[in-house]
Length: 306
Image (cartoon, rainbow, N blue to C red; front, side):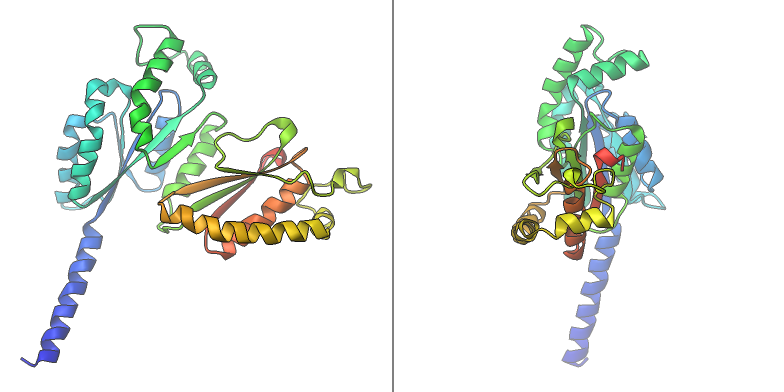
């Protein structure tokens, strides 16, 4: 057989093997966190986008379950497993189990949900459901669960604060994170008003209160940053142009660094006084700028209810 033909056959075999390995690779998302933070809602959202979901599967059965998923007549490529504090002492085995699954070619990551203590207390009182750790007060149960789950939170790739999330917004965020086949980092750009407080869990926060305020301009006060007249007023200022030039260089340098580190999503907050004029205009500009750079972007205007 001619050497050129042998090389061509070997090259083809390598490509077929690589394609087979990529096809066989499965993805497991372990959904966990603090009780009352939204685990059931997250699992339902994952189920809606095609994940095979199992809640409260004992950790001792996880490796066996993974083998069944891989070896079934119709292998399940996307699986979500829910676990919680009721696993008890076996939770310490989770990092070792995840490493074994990865060695089998199963991409395994943790989605960890949490919320502020006062929010969790309110949710339990509203639903009248007991906390899984029922042998002490609600406050004590939450504090003890937080201590036990902290090592798992520390190794989680996806960590979401659901303190201000509704079931609808949490489902939307889960679908944004896991519903796309793209690998680009998901960037949330929030506009907000400082007088209403900053959004929780921001990675980066920018204060644009130094820009001229449309609130004091007749005819613009009642409009929002989505109105072309307000946009023209803010963007027509020389200070805005200088600021955006610096901002474009800053994010062009910084975001690739975050993506290289494997950060799945980034939350950027842009605040002005009331959150309806300047911050909205700058958030819109930044969102479009990052989309042109190839990132997946969600623009959220909190004070506009969007």
